[in-house]
Length: 104
Image 1: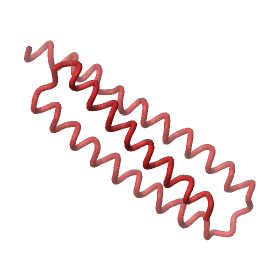
Image 2: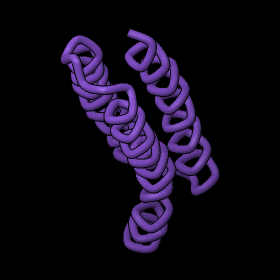
Image 3: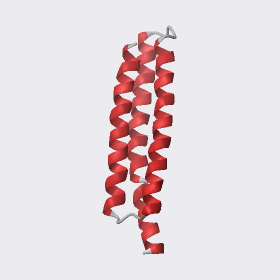
């Protein structure tokens, strides 16, 4: 159960970082209502995906896999989680720039 609790903590932190990145980027680029609505949708999607990953780790902790196998999967999932958190948050930069260029 230790891996599931640790993953849950990382998911909570990643959600906060994801939200902050999106809010700061959209605010700094002078985001419109459409971009703010997009942020809400993106955060909702991230939360749903995070809950799916959290459930996966609850099942993996009860699966009987070896400690080494769990540790390997945990590191891989942790890397992917944080990579997608940062990349996903930064995707608003080109979208905001394009939106601003098209619609002022």
